[in-house]
Length: 391
Image (cartoon, rainbow, N blue to C red):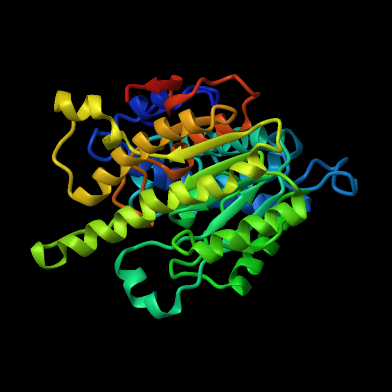
């Protein structure tokens, strides 16, 4: 029998794709994220296989990963689409079956083709801007058990001449090629392993660095290392953060103190410490990861449901205020807040409804744009593009 749904062209928008599959609002983003993840795995396999290239490119030494969509042969692309279908999870298979022609076992699945095409499109765009990335880690041995309970690691990246302090590897790593770092706080040896994996997919250079945003000494050492090696910092992306739930009044104070220390105090300290390096750059940009719950307008209007983690919401409101005040103190630097949305990451136990790759897009757009392309403000990214939010 023919496919249940008529095919959509790969160039169709994500919103059109999701509506065409008639995914319910309760699971549409979850299923989309799962399908996208399976397509990313196919993309990764193609990057590791030079025989997947067009015949005239296979022996061309100038052609290096990441390979673009136009460099992959249709035979290899079709093979991966079939493999994704055969290895599909129990959750994604019903979506693929809506597009599967059961009269022919070799018929191509247009849903998987759409997902894979969009993975290539996103990564082809990122390939246009080369970056030097420094993956950093934190090590706080005496608090290892507590860190696991708080569901965070303070891994840090430096991209181009840019520093990204990351709340969790899932969101941070999707700003470039996905490499998921271990959930536990990772040591430098693990960071070096991640660096080696990055190097397989890029012609960039990568340098490990260690940074614990809650340690003054660690911040000073990291800033000095950046200055000694690069001489300047173009972009600082403040993404380090934790969400500590408070079950009752017995740990209420700890919940707030730990959350505000990491999410607000450390952001302010790291930013202030990086200002001298930022002022040596012609870019001079600070992007701080915020949240839709940080909008005072939304809180006053009552458009959001009650928060499950009060300290986290309060900290993000404070981060927005911190951004507004710091841009007064340092008018020569561009300050912006970014709302990635409710992403499925370790921070929320992977219960978010948004693909982390989509959530990271707002950061990518702000960081890679020409100076002056986006005003100072509170930004988010949707299917319609970039949008400025109300504080």
